[in-house]
Amino acid sequence: MQFYGDYHTHTKNSDGHSTVEENVLAAKARGFLDVAITDHGLGCVIMKEKDFRKCFLEVEEARKKHPDINILFGIENTIIDADGLIDMPVERMEEFDIHIVGFHFPIRIPSGKAFREFWLPALLHGNSDKPSRELIERNTRAHIKMLEKYPVDILAHIGDHTPLDAKEVAKACADLGTYIELNSKHLPQCEKMLDAMLGTGVQFIADSDGHRAERVGEFSDTEKLIEKFGLQDRVVNLRTNFYLRSKGREIIRPTVSGYKI
Ligand SMILES: [Zn+2]
Ligand SMILES: [Zn+2]
Image (cartoon, rainbow, N blue to C red):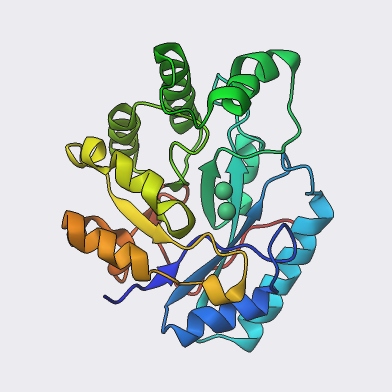
């Protein structure tokens, strides 16, 4: 199976262990057209604006040294409350070439209300075998509101600590043009939800979420999942080109980032 890129990788600029260039070299070794560097957003307790700047300069440097691969400067934001807010104002989204949102902690929780309504239930019951209907409905609503508010390209590790109605969220993703991730680190979770999502028109994207260069483009288990569920035509990075909702166009190579230093 030939994948053309990995669109979710981390570096030392957030909680990863490799440099931008090491991730780029790993992607080149896999024969990819694209690799996205997607460190965490400012809601993440370890992140500061200077980390984005440093990461962006490393991406620019890597672009000069490796013009034979398209390097996207992306971000992985986090959903922060039950109204679907994320840890970045919508106006800043133009600065990033690709935009991922998932649920994470520890983060800077914006208010007591967000903590009570969204974070505490996730911490206490997020991975429970029998989440309450109320929790599922609240998380489903939060995700759909988030997808409506922001032009998100990829919904990362769906359902992690946020039990939700996968069919309803997948329907919203299909309508709005957001891809659901087949995340190498969270495949069993994805697989559990696949049956519910397949009846919608949603498309998927294989991503490693690699925090080390060795993990970049590591899709061997993802390939098995794709074969098992017959998803070949619905995984966008098995195509040479695909639409990016946040940009309103297909990927253009080479990418020129709009990040403001
Ligand atoms: Zn994540
Ligand atoms: Zn990640």
